[in-house]
Length: 213
Image (cartoon, rainbow, N blue to C red; front, side, top):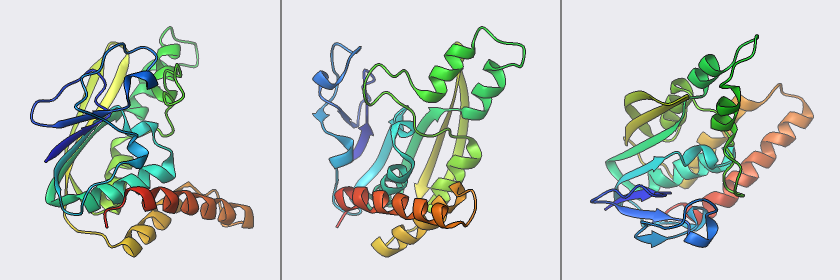
């Protein structure tokens, strides 16, 4: 069982291609999806899936939800099951599209980093690099096996492939998320600790929908 989440117009043979229904799209007129689902409400049995792929989808998830999905995908996948994610390469995009003296590609760079914004879901919530992807993979029980960086016109992308090497319990998933999200705290002041609590609450809300039981 191999699934391709947020397939758009890219149909992959041998996978169950999953996307929003056509009426959720504003630019795409047709769909190649095998199944229509809201990814925030999707779940599978534990240790059931062999491979999960996402191409330019992961960056659309809020940071706390991205953690919940990583934990949930860990629960869906078999041991040694594959997780393949492609996202905009934040560091390379910034380096090549922005300059103190102005650059004609600045608008393209901003769009690639923050999303095309023509639909409610077409917003990017995180900027990923090889280092950040490695950290989130390892935080949620995956080993990163390969990294491939590509360029399309003036946009720069990074694709990583890894495998599940351990199965997380529900409590372990919560502990891993709490630790990962601490990276985003400015300090240990009261307001920052409260902020962290909100992130964990959002994480747990999503986890309750998608984590395999």
